[in-house]
Image (tube, rainbow, N blue to C red; front, side, top):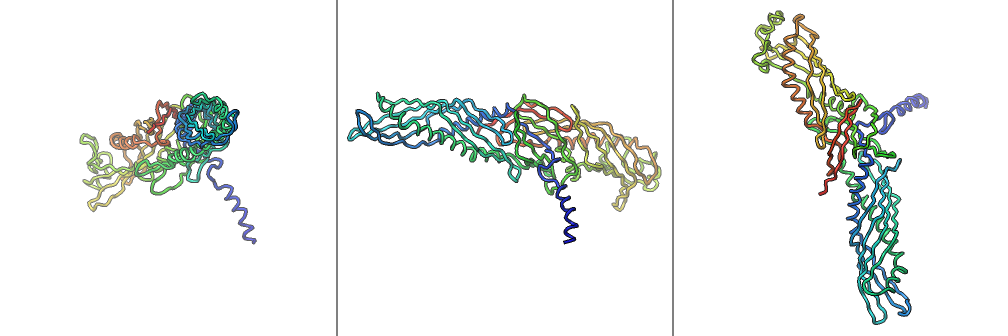
Length: 481
């Protein structure tokens, strides 16, 4: 018991300090903001889907007995009721803070056609019936959540439907039958249709909208090295004017996951509403990618003499180094050299308003290639450069391009004496410009996909660089099959 009492305070402290999903200080790497304009578009598209669903609603038959002067008692039946046409107008999707979204459809219209039969003793009458249902109002709350896998969820709650007016047209001069409908059937018809509308809407949310949200990718493959984690960090957040969806936005090694040692920054998104949707992509996304490719050795390189251009003032041979590193030529006469380079650490992309830059530092080690095929280290160089970067949006992907900057070479360590690195600087600059940059830019041109639902196309983009994040505004279009 004494040991337990001593261990309990430290255990509680560890529990308090252990981060949990959605905990304070855990920021999203990517935020998708859907504006009023985007919600209006979604509402219009959704109402078109619901219109098609309404046409498939099946209505029950209405039968019963009547007693009408001077006809006396009889039996009636309204059967084969079907929705012939409908028009859902005035659809709106508005944020519902703390829950999700509220869908309202107002001033809508449904036309129902039916057959009628009346029987009294041996007399039978029949004909057609046309019912125009006007001023339909529908309201439902869409509660948004997050499942453990990181995908969004939606459930319908609080559905209500109201019919303002019902107009009936019956074939033939049968005013008594019209009165019969209004007096004995209309109220039941209203209740049934209102109930059927909500039933259809709730089923559509369950069978159509929820599976559609499942098409949002949780992870997306970038290439043979990396994948990107697009799991939701919490349920989508509705405010008065918008809906924000927070994604982890971390790029990780596809073979094994290891957490990075830095957090995503807090992003202060500008108040912009001209586009349907905005993507705020923090430097965390790009810098986790840099860590993955650095650890995979993507930027490691080696330079041998056969890679040096014929017109170069220096060759990677000990003989060529004789004038400025005589000791190297004496110790290793007539031998070739090899330069092996790697990034000192993963280069991070720096975001400042209107500008992107990075300052990679490379470490290069020179080896003499001995006759025994062994490699003898002889000196080490440090190479620093400033680069500017461009990011662009291409249909559904963020792509990039690096612009070269001037390099600075420094002799870090030497076993063959101190020497001037100016000629090596020219050689390294040639290699970096003609080999390393094209390799990196080819990879950046492949880009990575944004988290999009199935059949969504983005267009009319506007790209801005802010402190710590890229801000992409765009409109969207649902590509119907």
